[in-house]
Length: 279
Ligand SMILES: [Fe+2]
Image 1 (cartoon, rainbow, N blue to C red):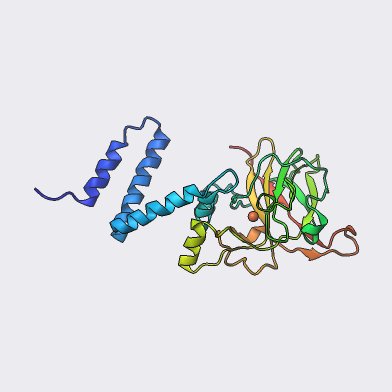
Image 2: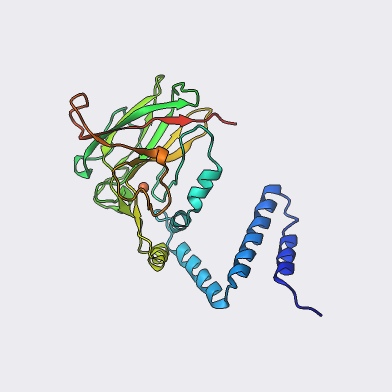
């Protein structure tokens, strides 16, 4: 009798799941098993390494709570989050990028132009632009759900000194599709490194810094929403963002405010968003 080969085992496992009645689940499971098995064969994974992997994933789960999502962070630093964005991108629409672990639904709806933070949160900045469809037609009733960290690099959920929903807000466009809001100039911040993902970065000799950015989820009735960032063109981490989130089309100058800009801001950035229609 000849010994079972890795390929025979892989086929046996795939066959065991081939009866899943839901076609998409069947497809996902077969591909997952195929690639997981190929990984073990290619690397000749040892039992000790398998156990180290189990312990790492266990610790990742145990680090998660209502406000800390270590698994999203893991997906981010492995580039999986960015890859999922890429394979789901709509041609001609604003490019998307990672959601990240700090999004909180339910931010307050604010008046157009309102300041979403406090004076002590950083350098006053105006961000403005238009939301249009792919033909350049302004989108009425588009919503921009905005969030970012303060200049100490912390989001409200990480910083007891900030009130809930500080530096967060939802803005709704009128018929001209225009939006504007006041915030602070974004800064680089380290992703949380006190969990297993921090250990992974340290083992790999990678830094933990994100390129400075403002988050936005832009949506409009009848259109595909885009989860994206506005990046600061002057930031030193654009080429080495720890979660692979930077796309050239999302980088903007945060220029010093001039005589024609509102007197209460130090910087101005212009960013238009383009949404694709629903298929
Ligand atoms: Fe962020």
